[in-house]
Amino acid sequence: MIEVNGRKIEWMEKETVIELLKRVKYTFPLVVVKINDKVILRKNFHNTTVPNNSKISVIHMTSGG
Amino acid sequence: MNRIKYIKIRKKLQESCVGIAGLGGLGSNAAISLARAGVGRLVLVDFDKVEESNLTRQYYFLKQIGQLKTKAMKENIKKIDPNIKVETFNQKLKKGSMEKPFYDVDVVIEALDHATTKATFIEEIMLKFPEKPIVAASGVTGYGDSDRISTKNFKKLNVVYDEEALSSDDDVLLAPRVSLIANWEANIAIEILLGKDI
Image (cartoon, rainbow over all chains, first blue to last red):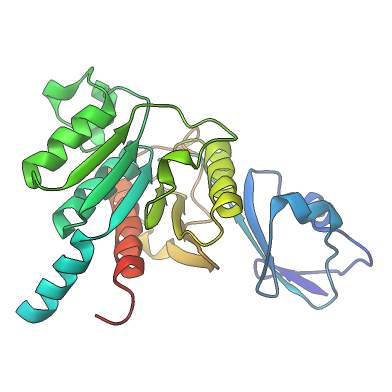
């Protein structure tokens, strides 16, 4: 099990951040993903795998300013 | 008011510099608040002109319609305090060099409009100036629901955040919520500038 922005979902072995984001349908322009308090930048999304039992925070940007 | 504390704060803020990317609803209101608080130097970046439709939430006036936002904002700040140093860049931030106007500021405020530009700008600052504090905002649209807003911290990045707010393409932009979030950003900037030892 992993937790994405408070929502519990199944953990998948060897899943990268980019694959996880696709799975949970986060397609908006993202800024940062944090896995267990470690910040993962967008350029590392494809080579960072999500460990089991991790807590993931996803911050997205919405237009308006 | 605690006079001694106030004088200490004013002195520290007077020696500080805040950079603001974008002078729309977020940037114009944040700039005015920071000027009133006494931040000594402001670096303001925008390419746009003041339009009549901006007046519903942005800190400009009828007679400024058609003026560059950088020029109009400088004028408004100088009316509050002529001693504040206001440096303006009338330019569109372009991917690859977005960080340039902000190389020597103490805190960067992201006050841009489009989601993609916001994301690109924040990432560029984080990559090029990893030690520079950034204050950003996402989710300014609509009205009410103030309690849904919170600050998310990611190392040097602080995001004033409402996950549930819609994109401005699908909702409205109104003065109370936009200026609430603009001032929330300004308040975080002040907190960063002053630190804990005041």
